[in-house]
Length: 124
Image 1 (cartoon, rainbow, N blue to C red):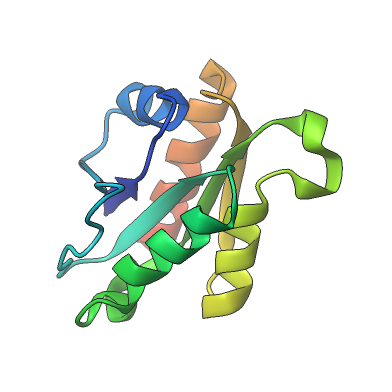
Image 2: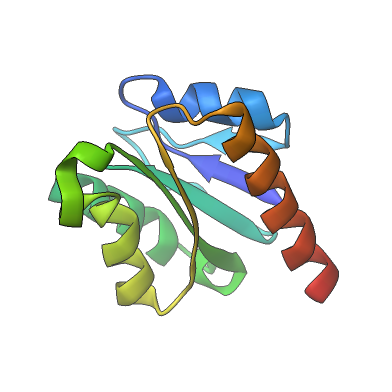
């Protein structure tokens, strides 16, 4: 399973480094990358532009065929807007929101995330 992500402040990048899984960082200025294997996208919460950028990636070539689901990073201080980009994308593409974490995540988040990915891999 490939972990794709976009990170503007470094929080998501730090989380991805902690999980120690194969990953691909999406370039904010050019998200048009062809992905030919199952992947999860980790999305930070910023503004609606993030949703547009990730949508470009998903809709590029046949990427949507390999998209498994979304993971959101955000701040719990935003209440109902917590991880809204990942939630919006999940609804838009009818793919599951697999996991959420705050900021760069905790050690417990890393363990739970890895378990979630492992369980998904065993189901398919």
